[in-house]
View 1 (cartoon, rainbow, N blue to C red):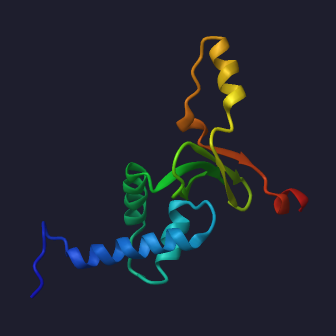
View 2 (cartoon, one colour; view 1 turned 90 degrees about the vertical axis):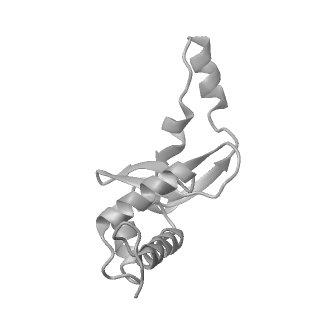
Length: 137
């Protein structure tokens, strides 16, 4: 008989976490919690949407995902393995993501400082736009 911790089967949770992580890495674009959930259900049909939301929160705390703005009214996130200061360009239509190494906001930061403001990098870690394919459509 399998023992549980606090009534939770550690094996099931491990498999759910692995399925969510694999799904997040395989999506290939900025994703919502619902999209992550749908992708993970291919391997774990009974996984709950709440589990996907919790995983994203945990990954945000661990630095594995970053906020990528919104798409169709839902918060979207991007899996991120980049080191150092960087920003993401995120297509508001299809969710395509490009990483900009370094700080793309140097001139904006200087302009803000000249008038006594400090730019919050967290608020601008992902910059919305349209990829070439969506802009051409």
